[in-house]
Amino acid sequence: MFVQISSILLYLLFIHIPKSFGDALSKQNNICGPLDQPSKVFNFDELKLYQIKNKKGTLCFSSFLRLNEQTNQNNDCLFKFKHIEHGYYTIQIFSTDLYIGIDQKSLDDNQFLNQFSLPIDTLMQFKFLHVRDGWYEVLVRRTSSIWSFSNNYSNDATVFQTQWRIQGINQLFRAEQYDD
Image (cartoon, rainbow, N blue to C red):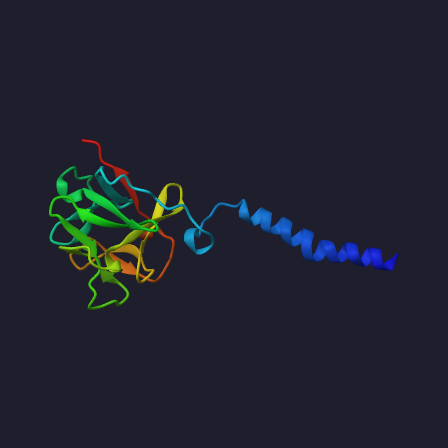
């Protein structure tokens, strides 16, 4: 009798309760996104143009990449995506035929995104990983950094790569198909 009770208690303690607890956790909203579990990767139509948005504005090119508070409908705020592999894309600035990337000379944290003529490196490949409510982290392939933005000295919201995940709105982006 003691052996049967012990077996039941051990089953409950080590198998049933942790499994139930894990099921309850998995049903919670995913507030940490890609850090906790595999996330949905955004797939782009290579024949379409997209705008990249954050709750603070739209990503645009104006001598550097920055967030524009007004939704600008010009070509400086439109991007083309080309799939490379494993959900990673190159991002081409439509108005200039340049590509978004990170300078290979310095892989320091907080390096600003820049534009380059050819997508020759994995520092120019990005993946949009779903975090919550249609918002995504943008992952840099080689460094596993993510995009973030902050205001610089002239109060422009510039976009950079960082290793620090704070899951705030500064690190959440979405790509919306542009319909002219």
